[in-house]
Amino acid sequence: MRCAGHDHFRSEYSDEQRAHLDLVLTFNRELATAGERGLDLTGVTQALDPDPLRYMWVDEGDRQIPALIEKARVLLAEAAELQGHARVGSRLAPGGAFAARPSVAVGPDGVILLAW
Image (cartoon, rainbow, N blue to C red; front, side, top):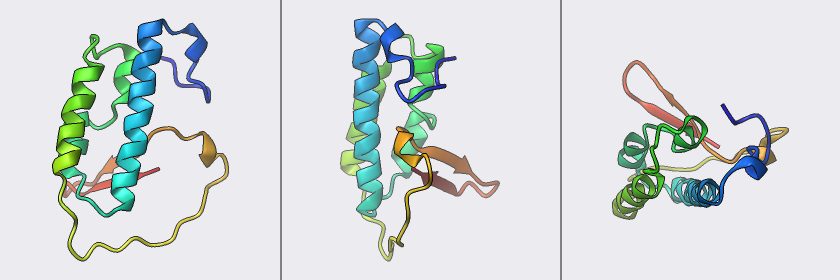
């Protein structure tokens, strides 16, 4: 499992793995921006199962990362604005600058909480 450092042990990756990591990190920023805009990310997070980086660390993706991210981008482009949704202020948590992916929690009632 490769998730212990800020660079995710990037130097140990092949060129293909580095390209996949860059793709995933770029998409994660797009997803965070969409959340800030108040878009409904339900379909996107369900398609990502829920964390795209998980495929990088354990190689469960079987080189499917580009296809997975493309599917998620299509869903993100189709995401509707959440009516009545209001963002509240936030502050950077200590060490938060090193976070490169969302945390996802699903409650027993199916409600999804995303945090960056």
